[in-house]
Amino acid sequence: MSQVENRFEAVSGAVWRCLGSEIGLVLRRRRNQVLLAGLAALPIVIGLAVKLVSSQVGGGAGLITRITNSGLFLAAVVFVVSMPLFLPLVISVVAGDALASETQLGTTRYAMILPVSRTKWLAMKAVGLLAFVIVGVATVLVVSLVAGFALFGINGMTLLSGDTISPWAGVGRIALMSVYVVASELGLVAVGLFISSLTDVPIVAMAGTAIVPAVCTVLLAVPQLQAIQPGLLTYHWLDLTTFLFAQPDVALIRQGLVVQLAWVAVFGSLAWARVASTDVKA
Amino acid sequence: MSQADDANVTADAVVTTTGLVRRFGKQVAVDGIDLAVPSGSVFGFLGPNGSGKTTTIRLLLGLLGADAGTIQLFSQPMPKAASKVLPRVGAVVEGPAFFPYLSGDANLARLQAIDKTDDPRTARVRRAEALERVGLTAAARKPYHHYSLGMKQRLGIAGALMRPRDLLILDEPTNGLDPQGTREIRNLIRGLHADGATVIVSSHLLSEVEQVCTHVGIMSRGRLIAQKSMDDLRTARVPRLSVQVTSSTATAARKALTKLKLKPEGTDPAHMLVTIGDVPVPKIAKALVDAGADILGLSVEQPGLEDIFVELTGVGFDVAG
Image (cartoon, rainbow over all chains, first blue to last red; front, side, top):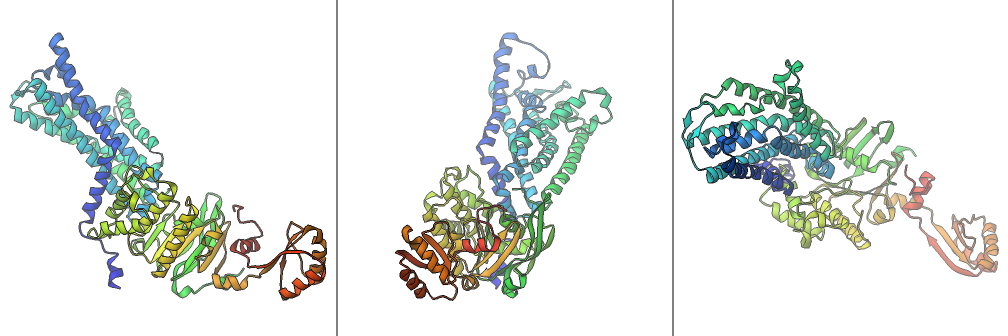
């Protein structure tokens, strides 16, 4: 009888095994690896373009020309460029897919009858997505730094405020920036999970998720909507440039994080309510 | 048919439902069924496509919520006791489902990894044993999307067999399998039964499971229209005599049978089916010979489940409810 009873006990390390499996599933998937390769290509393409073109044209305005002064700026430029479109698109694909693809395959029902609790199911999906976002942003960070140093050399970084900081301090700034980028995508991950829980057609969930930041960006362009704009998902996304000033605006960063947490709270709860309801569609 | 007649040993039933109802919109998929699956039985859960078998199974496993009624697995309420009960249950529901880009073995490993009660120390061995048991060892490393329908079905069953189970629920386990594969599944079910597990096998093909079942429940249009042990079913069956004669003597043969107060049935006049009743077979044979009928074949037939189903419902088995 004790043998029977033992079968209901959780084995030690079960949580880590489960999360490891989920993260492995996300990162080993060929489609996701292609997306990561796309992210990795971005700094190389921008870096080469700047290197080749600026040597002929020379000068120019804004962030991009600063790359030629310090390779560190390549990472900053890549984050600023990918923040509004490319990165959210990549994340929408993976997040929209998370629950919907398992429902479509039917693997959800086999997980449920193991059993895996609904809350754990959602949590492991969220962790898998978070891992993907972190790996994606880290990929951009590392490739940007390597490409930037290789193409433009390791120089001190002249900030937008005019001060020059050491290369190591510059790496620190860029690293902080990447952490903010990861945090800025959390709301989108929650939105993706919720939309993914609504359907068993992954492509619909992906498109539905990708539309959300696009709509937010459109709303930001309408002055009459000023009252709601600070709460929009994308409102603080480009505030990541504050890390390029000698004194980053901490209040701004805090507001950005609060907005993300609010979106996580709302859409995370909606997703949970959806996943926890009794019927498993597939 | 009163439920009292059908009631099996409810006392040590592994699965019990009372008044179970599930609707999808206006359609009543499961219409108040009282299921009792005795411990240690091989329970054939039979009925045409669309009769509510799969919906019932999904209700049992907590994949669907019931609109009314109660469900007990191992005397514990479902879905409330799911975390206690489901580790004792292995199931294949609505066909196998795995990640197409992972190998069979990797797919099973994934199931083990997310099961918090699965012991990682023995995981690999149990996986290999389950694959061996369904004959998939050679294909274990191949990606799932290269599997044939039959191999997919086998992997689904392997997934249910990775741990010792007290109850196995196999929903249409022979779908997509060739006759050899079907035979293997039957042997597998016999083996599981011999090991002491209770097995519920659903099928819309009666003949496939008839041979392995100790009990059957027959579904039609969301209702459980019969629930009996095979022994009860056999004794309740009335054997029939198949009479085949040359067509020139068919009329004479028919007359002879009618004279014995028998009612020949069947569409072919030269091949009659007769419910024997208490007339001894030799007497029928003699009457036929005396009437000048040239007998080509004379045999007593035990009606199969299919005939019983038609008897119970008045419709053919292939008609979806």
